[in-house]
Image (cartoon, rainbow, N blue to C red; front, side, top):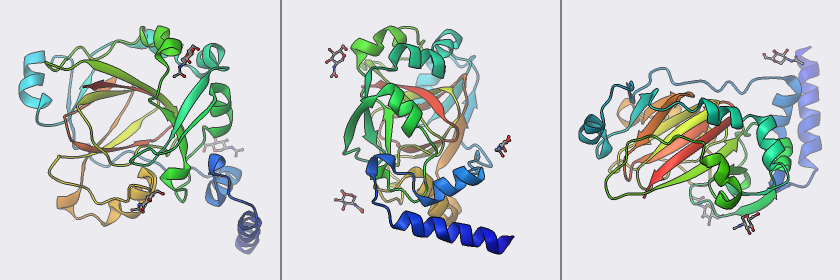
Length: 271
Ligand SMILES: *[C@@H]1O[C@H](CO)[C@@H](O)[C@H](O)[C@H]1NC(C)=O
Ligand SMILES: *[C@@H]1O[C@H](CO)[C@@H](O)[C@H](O)[C@H]1NC(C)=O
Ligand SMILES: *[C@@H]1O[C@H](CO)[C@@H](O)[C@H](O)[C@H]1NC(C)=O
């Protein structure tokens, strides 16, 4: 039995090695075998969440004093987005936006490549689990680059976290991505991140601690290959957010994300 499996796997490997690589459909040997054999990618939440979690009793003054300029925090129940969630089911989004073009970005730190596809095509063909062996630069997904003319009426239904940082204005970034996808380490201004469906695992380092990572590799490969070798002192702050929670990241904090499930998410950047 084991031998037979081995032979099938070797045949699949051989078959795949003879086919040309197609960047747009970077879902190579391992993911197809996982898919065929119905193995889970085994994506799990962290053992210990090390980002502080607060409930909606956190006041704006406390947020500004304790977190806004110094450390990340997850706030539960800050807003009620159940109406927005109902508009973001796969069926509703396909009905409304199926024939619209969306702009996909590669999942590497500096997001070089952009490709436009019909939203329906993205959902039906490209929204699939990330392959650990695919380069971030060969993996396309939908986040940011939203056409606000087309998506504006949906975003109007979103209740953004009410905590503003003085002197900033907010900009939304909406996306949908398969399990195992995510953006590798990068930093920018402060903001909030929320999942509408699914779960998103976060890894964060303060500005002065540049993480060890290859900007062309995916978060998933970093998690599998680099993360297990980290010394305790080099571990990031980490936590998985669920619907109904928002994560706040301060200015210049390094962060990487990993969608544990197929996820619909929205970030509010404060620039
Ligand atoms: C695949 O795995 C899921 C979850 O473990 C299970 O519910 C489902 O029945 C499996 N499907 C097949 C075709 O084996
Ligand atoms: C956004 O959508 C509108 C309406 O469909 C279209 O006219 C416009 O060209 C789009 N903008 C971009 C940057 O694709
Ligand atoms: C990442 O990819 C870019 C573009 O292909 C390349 O120029 C760069 O050298 C790569 N960086 C690393 C660290 O592999």
